[in-house]
Image (cartoon, rainbow, N blue to C red; front, top):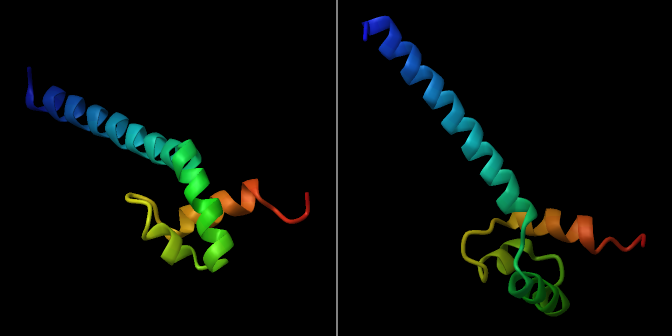
Length: 78
């Protein structure tokens, strides 16, 4: 395999890997387990919109993810 073919092959794989990582990140933001959902609801009832405090109780979740989840699923306009 020539240097050019190796470089092309390397770059092709890295672009696939980065798109897979982006897709899995989007999926993880959208998919909350039933336990996480229950905890978010209970914590919201206790502390309100203190997203960073709630996120601190759920490993691997950010305050932004929690707030986005809440705003999309528990909107007060429903």
